[in-house]
Length: 295
Image (cartoon, one colour):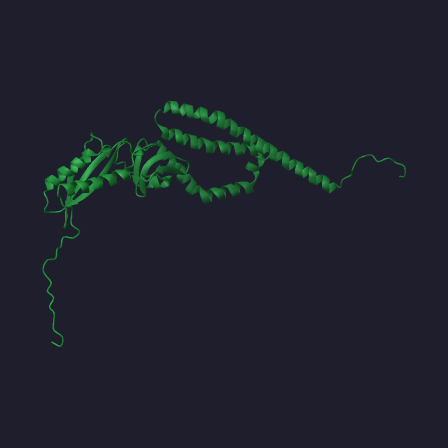
């Protein structure tokens, strides 16, 4: 009406009000979800996980394998529990138990990926429980060899002799034979040399042993050992067995190279012939006859 003062209120259509109400509800649920997830996860990371690790460390001294595995599994479990708490705090707890669609989706996901995921998880648990499989051990399997650094949820991290870290699926390690030919704290280096048949074999073995003994990184106990491996078609195969300390602190490839170079120098100095490239020798002479033109 003319002369009536405005009240200062804005009238919104009913659809706009419902839209704002829906956004308000979404933001509220998101706030509670993220808030609950963050609180539970931070408390778990700051309090629960360190406390559990201290207990595990106290009960399993000098066993980093169990400590590393427990930390990995606790983090996964903590993340899952924090997510579930966030869902419940957002008001969707009933959906997880009453919704046939959610249950069907979870069943489908686990049916597709569960075999591989749970296979890796169970394999990791078996590796952790194996007293002969520990972090720091040097292992060999059909796919390679190296030092075990950690056993994770899905893979085991191994550092190779080339100082490369590779991730090996846990199932590969449990499905194949593992060998530990180098002991716990030592590493065995085996090198073969081929000696010609017309050389003094005993002298060659003595010189080979001396070269191995002269290496600073080679241990005195167990002492280097040499042996005859094979009487081959073209040469005699002899083998030197050396032991070094923790391979994690040694460059094995450099040691092998230095040893081979030292063997070649020593054998050359002692006039010991290594295996010839071929056992067959050609001898004789070639005669060239010049023929006259037109002859």
